[in-house]
Length: 522
Ligand code: KIV
Ligand code: ZN
Image 1 (cartoon, rainbow, N blue to C red):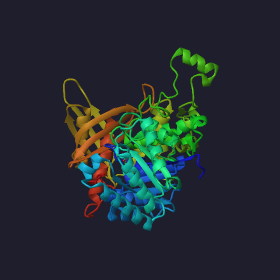
Image 2 (cartoon, rainbow, N blue to C red; image 1 turned 90 degrees about the vertical axis):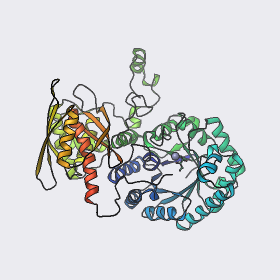
Image 3 (cartoon, rainbow, N blue to C red; image 1 turned 90 degrees about the horizontal axis):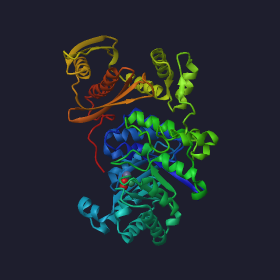
Image 4 (cartoon, helix red, strand yellow; image 1 turned 135 degrees about the vertical axis):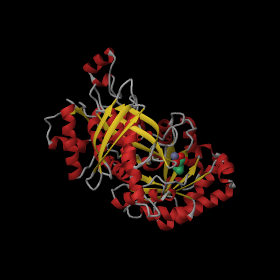
C-alpha cells in the first residue's frame, strides 16, 4: 500500500456496539459487517470474543463469511483472550488479533495495580503469543494520551520488538487536543526504533468533541490507520466518526495529500443502516450524514446555490450517497423499482424477505402518498423483526377517551399459525396495548423509555419508536415503525418479547450466543 493511503479500521461492531443501548443481535451484526465491506473499509473489528459467548459467535460468524476486509478481534493481554480471538477470526482469509493493555499512571495504579515493568512484560508476551497464531497483530496501549511519553515509547518499542505489525495510539478518554497529539506522534516517531516499519494507528474518543480533529492531527504526524465508527457511535460521547474523517481527507485532499479506499457513496446508506439497527438517531445537523447537512434554508444561501453550488457546498450530496431527491416511490412503483431502491439503501434481502417487504410497501403506499427512504428502511426493519418470531402482529385495536382508561385488543399469530387474542385496559393506549401483549406472550416487561421519531417527512410520516425495557434484570432495546404510533410502539415491544422468547426456547442450552448475556468488561 502506498504511503499516502490511509487504512480505515472500523470498530462499530466492537467499540460502537459496546456503548449503552447500541447492542446488536447476531443477524444485525452480520448486516452491518456486509455494509462495511461494501463501504470498502480495510479492517472490521468485529468484537471482543472473550466478552461473552454471544460476542465470540458473532465475530466467528462475520469472519466465516470472509467478506474481504481484514477481520479483527480484541483481546486483553492473556492467553485465554488471545486464543479466543484466534478461534473466532481464523475463518477469514485476512484476520488480525488486537491486544491491548492500559499504560497510563492512573490505569496502572487504580485499575491494573501493576508496575511499569510488569505491563511491558505482559504486552510483549501477549504480542509474541498472538504472533505465533497470526501474522497480523495490532497492539494498543490503552489511555496512551495520558501516559508519560518516555514510558509510552518504551511500551511501544517492546510491542514492535515482539512482532506487532500495527501500533495503535488511543485517546481513550477523549482528553487530548490536536497540537498535543501531533507532538505525541512526532515524539514516538523520533524515539521508537522500527516505528517506520509498522503501521501507526490512531483511535480517538469524542469526550471533548475533538475525535475527528485529533485523528487528523495524528494522520498529519504519520499515522496511516484511523480507527473509527459509523455515526461516531461508541463509549460515552462516542468514537471518531468514520464518515466525517473520511470526507475530511477526501474534501481537503490538496491539504492532506492522502486518500482512503472508502466508497464514499455508501456513507449515507451505511449511516442509515446503523442508525436504524441501533436506534441511535443521527442528529439533523450532524456533519456529512445529518438531514440538514445539505439543506440550504437561508435565502442568501439559496440564491448563491442557484448561481453555483460551490458557493455554499464543499461536498456534493451524491458523493456521500444522498440521492438528489429523497422522494422515491409511490403506489404505482413496481417490484423492480422497489428492489433497486432497497439495494441502493444498502440492504441485501433474500427473495422471501423482498416479497414481504414489497407487500408492506404496497400497504403503506395505499395509506401514504409518497414513500421516502426513511419509510423503506422502516419497512425493512419491521420485516426483519417480524421474520424472527415466534409471534407476529395480526391486528391491534385501541380506544382512548379523556373519561375512561384506554383499552386495547391485540391479535398475534404464533409460529404454528394459531392466533391468540387478549384485551387490557391501562392509563393510556400504550400501557393498555403493552399489557395485552404481555398476556399473549407471557413476557413481562418494565418500560423504561419510549422514544418517538418521524421516519420521513410530512404529516403522514411513519412513526419510528424505540423502547427501552427491562426483563429479569437485563435491559433491552426494540424498534418498531408504523403510520400509527401505538402500533409502532407495540411492534417495538413485540420485537423484544420475541427475542426473549427465542432465548428462552433455546434454554436448556447452557450458553446462548445471541443473548445479551453478562459481558466481561474492558
Ligand atoms: O479506547 C480505547 O482505548 C480502546 C482500546 C481497547 C483500543 O478502545
Ligand atoms: Zn475505544
